[in-house]
Amino acid sequence: MNALNRRNANVLIWLLLLTMPFWMIALGGYIQLGTQVVILALAAMSLNFLLGFTGTLSFGHAAYFGLAAYGAAMTIKYLTPNTLLAILVGVCVGTAAAIVVGGLIRKLRGVYFAMVTIAFGQVFYFIAFRWNTVTGGDDGLTGWTRQAIDLGVVKLDIEHNGELFYYVTLAFFALGTGIMAVLLRSPFGRTLLAIRENERRARFLGIPVERHIWLSFVISCVFVSLAGALFALLNNFVDPRFLRWDQSGNFVIMAVLGGMRSFWGPLVGAAIFVVLQDYISSQTENWQSFIGLFFVLIVLFFPRGVLGIIRRRVAP
Amino acid sequence: MTQLLLFDVFNGLIVGAFYALMALGLSLILNLSGVINFAHGGFLAIGAYLAFTLMPYLGFWGALLVAPILTAGIGLVVERFLIRPLYGRDPLYSLLLTFGLAYIFEDGTRFIWGAQSVPYQVPGWLMQPLSTQYFFLTGYRLFMMILVCVAVGGLFLILTRTRLGVRIRAGTLDLDTVSVLGVNVRLLRNLNFGLGIYLAGLAGVLAAGMLGLSPTIGTSLIMPSFVAIIVGGLGSLPGTLLGGLLIGVASGITTVFYPSATEAVMYVMMGAVLLVRPRGLLGEEGRIQ
Image (cartoon, rainbow over the protein chains, first blue to last red):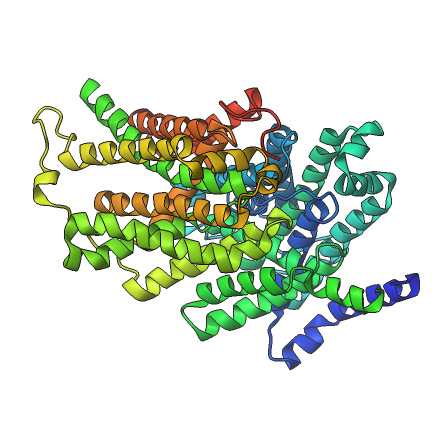
């Protein structure tokens, strides 16, 4: 794909995202569905920063997603009804956990890394599940809503205006993906690619591989946390399922479905996944089986993902 | 107090034995094929429900014997048609596939056998407490411990004394060389997978007698099994056994002093082990990538 094509693709994607509220309704969807796609896409793209561009498989990203969700929710409920502060607290909580866990696992690789991230993901699930008095346990944390954002000049009433909340979410999405894109183009990002392609060679070149993987893990978790905080605000609700392993698996399948090796792939994957899940769960009680079947079929017949296949067609 | 503590330690040992039984199966598959079998809990549930269905025809003992074998059979088919195409690719794909299978198994058992949990009948004489002072020492629990010991002993005998076992262990170290020496590696992986699933099925039947049957029975046991493998050390079966028992006893003891941290304690242990020995307690450097 040449530079012109890539620029066209970027313009097309941003146009589609910016006009979403206008065509989503016409296609029979609803605004929240679009917001959900954007938020989960941010999460999947952050995961892909680690998975697709550093070549490290984390299967526990829901933990940081959910922690940030709880952080944001609890800030509004217990501390102060300020949406921006809630997002900030959420991101800080998720990132702090990622720094600690990342430090513990930075030396592990491959299957081992994946397994440890799965297991660590569950710690926070159990804490949220068990600590009834603070987190609401299995019933989740209710009794709070996202608050209007007061920017001094204007007041954004995201509490009642779903469209406005979509655009606020999109702004955060743009911020997150923008930073990741810049990082990937920087020498740091190129170093991550080098580690993905050949870790041993990268090590011989004097690159501190462990530190880079740790850093990449933390950066990825910062934006997953951002997505988690936004997701809590979208639902006005948090429960332990936000940080369970099936949520982590969903992020991974979104990245794979869209195409791990492309920057926008996870966005495509998230869109397909969210719409499909929404449709199937409205049609049948056994939606779990269909999602499972979907996983199996993608792995067996579609491992490169949508964008991976398109890219192959365009530039063989 | 001592009685209570003893009760919880014993409970922890039993739970730990479960974790170990499951984790050993997972470990076998992981070591030889590099597949993290997320569906292991699903296989466990299938084993339990198969025993439940077979019991009216075969009785308790018949079901105990046949159900794990049938489960292993399902495992062989799954390996042959779904997992075999993924060898040699990024471990991500087999992980995702078994992840999807776990969804299907859980939902499938719910669809076939219902979402409500059902009791699993164990012969009455096995349920009698063996002593009045140590009321918790029922025959069934003791029987379970013995059976787990027999299963684990049998597994280690297979691995050290039979040709299949030696090949599995050799394959864990260097599969390419084993293949070059003329061993049918595809068959080896297939049988090894079946062996692992057999252990899951057996754990399922035993768990059914103790916890009752519900579709989520496997899901609740799989995470501790992962922790057991990590604590014990990847690539080491004795390590896995040790890890399972350790986290079982640790969470048993925690139940006495701080019940709400029952699950959390094993993850704390995992963190501590990773900090001191990143390869796990009995894991060796560079055995598994």
